[in-house]
Image (cartoon, rainbow, N blue to C red; front, side, top):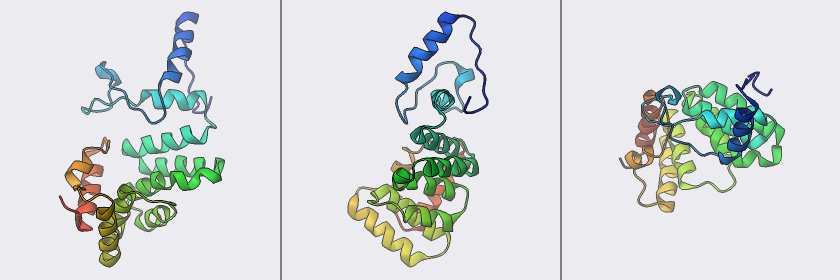
Length: 191
């Protein structure tokens, strides 16, 4: 009962269908849900499979980290931080591979120094990680470091554009999306 959630089924057949369908939801995947009551927002993204997977396997660090990522996307970054840190404690060897999730959760929670520390633990940062770390530095008025990181991000992806990048982010709270976009622009990344 990882999340303290009890699921009751109308029949044994319904319970078996659920057990068969849940593994089909692959790691990190988001599914469109056609039922309006299943949608968390007008973006038509359904996160229900993430919560079901967690409930069925609460000690899998990958699933625990995904729950933290999901909470960050849902506008609950402080809770996201807690879950991602839990995943890192459960699997310390996998922690560097989850550092970007922690960095994003800290950034979204406006905890920039902690975000910088988390992004700094990424072994081989991608242009996305460098761009988001640059936004952190811009937020604490460290423009020299923000510019250096933004330049490194553009070296890895010369076509990087803030508006295009933001279309790949699934923030459910528009203020969180705007906050990241503003930070990326403040770091000197092109719109």
